Image (cartoon, rainbow, N blue to C red):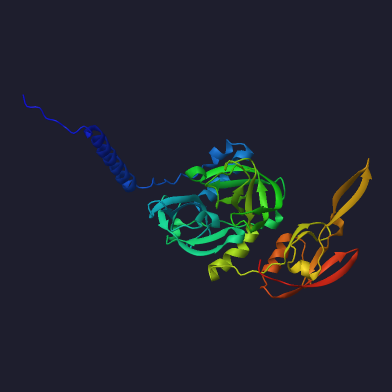
Length: 379
């Protein structure tokens, strides 16, 4: 009998070849498999809505009005392997986007598309488009993209006036958490005018809306809506140590979006000035909460809260007690003779100027009105 002999390492070689073949087949299938298209749901009948509770009807109507205005954002970037010196294209961040108009402008967060080599936008009908970068504004975490889609595929959102928001107001978030497209969650506004950090560590997002609606990775760039289905903000961040929902989320207010987006569409970037202060709203005006050392406000002599230090001796030990006197802080009432009652109004006026511009700030100090000239600078 004739015996056929194989190399000793034949089993290992065979397994290796089979594995490579299987990976190749899987890759080809994944590339050829089209993204699942979404069939348009039939309109909900009035009879069906009557069966729901009033709260359920609002939930359903908000989703029906706005879900087609939410897009899925996929990005690809290049990753370098320092060991082999090679570069590989990888899938990077996923997020959400908001259809702004019939021209194909899509709103999302800057951090969603930051560093991306390629950005794809998938609309509610399942069609995917390569996106062109129109403009970015890292300080507000806002980016505007543009896709070449037909008007019939685009369903623009309606913007609201975010200066009228109230703590306790019901809100709705639609986005693509963990890639689950057009997911609706709801909650309330927990607080207003929050100042939060963003991925550019030297920047702060001001006037953020704090919410308790569940938002997770993938929700970034999606709309925050009121009970009439109007956009009151864009979801941007969560406060979490594990990167998942913790009941504390933040959104960029609609008024900030409406101020920044037209500039990005026109110029591609925002050139702004800064005064070097943080403020909070009071009945009398905007009280200065913090003054940046060496900044324009500090150099002009504007005053923030004062730290008071008291020393005492007890039992032979020296005790130092420190407290903050907020009443010593200036209260801003006008900028260039324009009344400012909200932080949004204040920063809108400041950002209309350029670095080097001189403005006149009127403040309440020790019961008197004092006018202070301030020369603005870049943030």
